[in-house]
Length: 305
Ligand SMILES: [Zn+2]
Image (cartoon, rainbow, N blue to C red; front, side, top):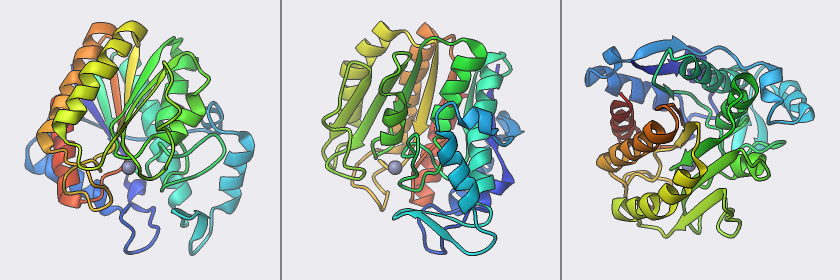
């Protein structure tokens, strides 16, 4: 069995401005590091299709999708919110990004891959039902989870979000859906300034103080996430794989190292093997130090293999 790596050249064409940390170089850095370490050669490589409006509408409102299509510029940049802008190729890029997670779901559900990593941008976990936010336009992980429900009759999906920022868009979309458990670690207080006081049995929001490292994350995974996941028994596990809790990340102030990403991935694999026939679909979210992002993503993907 195998690990699928799903990306698309158009993810490089979404450019907000020359100095924006959410840059095309992030994708290139990950891919180059995978090649250099000989990991890329062991992966099954696929190009992501674009998500259809029907797939997006399972989690986003038709009005919102229409508004994004209408705002897509022929030239220049359109500002969607204080942190997120669209250029001429941004719509195409984000459609491929959502499509990657849909396609990954198809591969894993049809036993064509054990698990999958979607190397895509823009990220997705801050996008809510009807809003962009924090560099995100559509919520790719949510689109993938909804696809698993609709197309494959999956009854319970877990989302592990170890990005340094809370996956508030994902919470917005699945807060009232008993089929979804969200396990989210995040620096607090910090952007998006949500999640710390909305914890529930299925929305396991675990705020962590700045400078938390591997020890703190391991404690959360073992003492908070594991018992909840063992009780919930997910049939498939999605990962919002942000690498911005890395010690070197310039936007945040956490202390994770490459080995911690390997540990978290192995932990998730154990849960997936126990409850979900090993099914894991991981999708890139944040991570803004190119070197740290590439190394941490390699640790994560090598552990998936
Ligand atoms: Zn982030």
